[in-house]
Image (cartoon, rainbow, N blue to C red; front, side, top):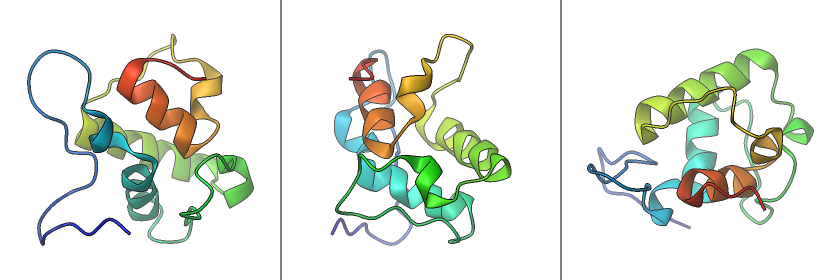
Length: 103
């Protein structure tokens, strides 16, 4: 269970050049953003970060809200080069955002 001080936000990157620090975009941090983006209607199980997001009932509106929130909080800009495999689960998304890998 990751506890943050009041006012702290999930996925707050360290400013500067280079990749976002791995702790900033952990699956747990992304799960917080997912719950926030969907108003708590989609909650990822903490014990299964590899679970496909489609199985959680994330609809297209939720996807857009989630990806926009990841952009706002993590500073990642999505483009056509984002491999679909990176968007399968919170774990694959975390790997992609921290090191560009989706495996």
